[in-house]
Image (cartoon, rainbow, N blue to C red; front, side):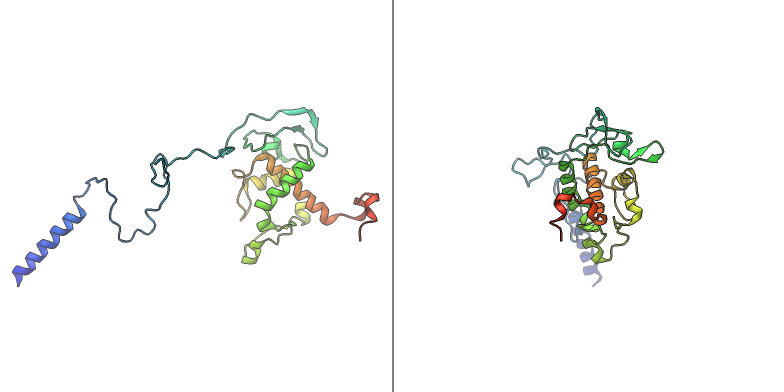
Length: 230
């Protein structure tokens, strides 16, 4: 009986060695994983081939128009040295899609040690429409379509969603709002790496429009259009 035990034990050890292989041995074959637990996921690794694509190359050429995160465009130059109404700084021309790191008001929201007021770029109908579009994509899910802090996430008990119509935010300088949008605050993540500088100011302009719409009076309506209101 003992002889068969030793023979079986020897065969078992031999099988373990054959299957596992010597420790440190390299093989071009993928290891046998009984419980992979998502360790080996089908994904493209940097500088690695991929059988998913016809050419076998993993890294792909970026989509046309792609802007790398953190891309530094030269410091924006003043536009004819003019100033924007309500702002304490010259207007600047921010290139669309720019992620700049300049230390000026347009990129930081600060003037010296204080949050700046006003917009560093001209607020046009085009900018407002861009702000509405970007707001709908990035902000409305939490803050709601009208900025009242009643977005879809609040239905799932997401905490501390700000209401843009609170007096605290109505009185908040535009530069401070820009900083919050860039770096985040409390449970809100920062969007500095996702939203271009010009688009951040566009969103702030749209937020101001939402606030104005909620607090507007009949005196804000042009006289020729008041008769059409109910």
